[in-house]
Length: 299
Figure 1 (cartoon, rainbow, N blue to C red):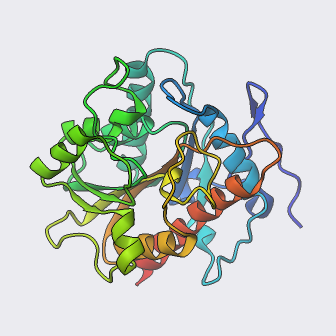
Figure 2 (cartoon, rainbow, N blue to C red):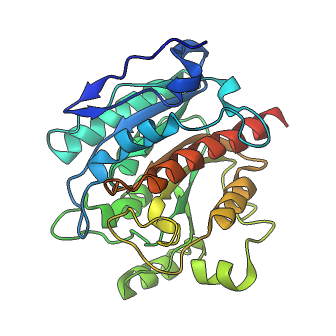
């Protein structure tokens, strides 16, 4: 029987370790997956509450089963770090996140970053600047996030993927169904690969998604608004026409198959008080993604 696990708090919010109810205390050196709560919320533009997302996901993860229906992803080891201090200027916070990710990459761990708003992906990917091989970014999102600036800031969450491109990463977008004319032109002119929500609705998830010349090493960034709001209403910028649960699962499984996932983040959950299904859905999505990665490594 697992002894009760002490649940640490940060600013009044609980931050239990991911799946601590089943795993108890875990050894960071033995864990492949390092969960990093990042309650970063500085530029939300519609609904608020993403700073509470990481706590809600970790709390919901206590209700997960170890068996994901196929195997036990936790056998690869899951360790949860303390939440990142997100006070200070964006450059400061994102720089600290980059350093922590860089350390994990150097130790051959897979960072699993819980947001918070989408801007944190910029900091996370900064940690791969010295990675030994090219890294491609796969973005699940309702929005393109390709604006150069928004509301006076280049670090607005609507600019996250534009900053990622500034780093020189290749980008492929899945599930987009809302973008400005300027973003559409930018995406066309820069030949950014995409599988939009309308394409999936019309033809389903194809058996092959990423181009053959897309990097073998990939970082996955999941904005929860890529899911349809009937499934995921707890987000600041909901957009109708999103992915279903099984479309998301099939797309993740397809892009992970045959490639090396070096890290992933899940962002933009804004919990609704008393409505637990949203954060549990995200916790399950994270654990299932660990499962896809684990089985791909063992194939």
